[in-house]
Amino acid sequence: MLVAPNAKRTACMGLHDGALRVRLAAAPVDGAANEALLRWVAAELGVARSAVSLARGDTSKRKQVAISLPLARVEAWLISLLGAAASS
Image (cartoon, rainbow, N blue to C red):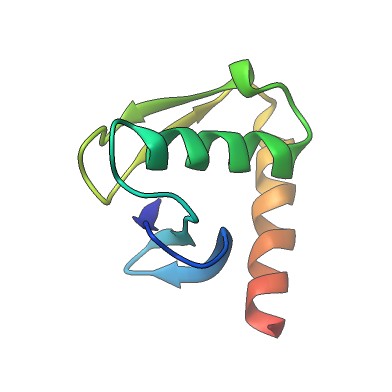
């Protein structure tokens, strides 16, 4: 994922350079943007926050997120998310 903090609202903006681009309504201070990203992913997938963790990119704009769900469910979410981002 490629994140952009300090946005007006948290939303997926589609793909950018092979990564999911997400704008975050949180400042990159004291891990607030990372936590906002993880909470957003968990809410989008309808799972507990504990099912989502940051695998890489703690201080980078490029993040890797680990999700404790079957791959098919995550793929379906990504397909629907990218379809919604393309239509907006």
